[in-house]
Structure formats: C-alpha cells, structure tokens
Image (cartoon, rainbow, N blue to C red; front, side, top):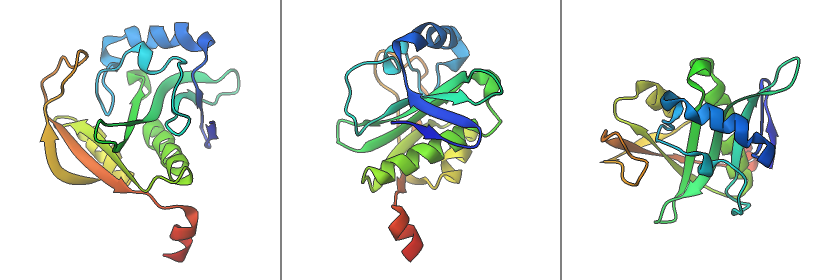
Length: 172
C-alpha cells in the first residue's frame, strides 16, 4: 500500500531502509510516537496483516525522497483499530504528521474501517492538537503506559474518531 500527498510519499518499509531507519531511531528524542516509544522492529519489513499497513513517511524533494518518520495502523488486544505515528524531531512543526495521518485515515476508511483510536501523553499538547485537527475526540479515558518500551510513566489520553468513506462524506 502506498500514498502520495503534496509533500510526502508513504510506503511500506523495505530491507534497504533498515540502516537509515536505525539511525533515526537511535536518536533518543525520536522514540516517542503518538507519542510512545518505538523500536526498529515496529517498522522494518515483517509478515503483517495487509489491512493494517505500517508505512514509512518520506519527504518528497527535488532529489531522492528523505525518510522523516513512520505511521501505521495496529490493533489493541480489544480489537480496536489504532493510529500510530512518529516524526523525526528535526522535522516536527512542519505539518508532516497531520498530512501523513490524513492520508492514512483515508486509507483506513477505504479499507472499510469506521472507527479508530489514538493516544497521546498527557503532557504533549502538540500531539493533542494534531489528533484534534484530525477529528479525534477524547473518550475521557487515560492509562499509564505498559510494556518493555514504556520508560516514561506519563498518563496516555485515549481519543477516538469516526471514519467515513467518500460516499458518506458526499451524502452529508
């Protein structure tokens, strides 16, 4: 699965991306994604559900595209669809996350998903603003992170958005 926006190209990770991706992830500041810690295994090629794409985000340039982040869909143990994204700290504040996530949400709607969740650390107003811009609304729920990559014990706020396909949007 691929997507192209005015400034970005989203595509699956290939084995050739591992070195560049590893270098990006080595930066301790980058290991927060909507905004949870990630590791290279989350984004390198591996067998996966074709309905749950994980895509690298490349900035389109006059030369070779430049890797600046990743976004993807996953499922919680409950079965809920979840949006995940991270952007190289040096590239944040330029609207890349919202552009990439908007393209990914369109893919999710096209795949037939009708609802999606995302989370952000309670002390991250930029992530909260991004999700709000994308149509996510608070569920009123929060949880402390768990798992081996959870180093920060900051509550994560849970948000949810409704997805609609183009037919629904035109009828509204």
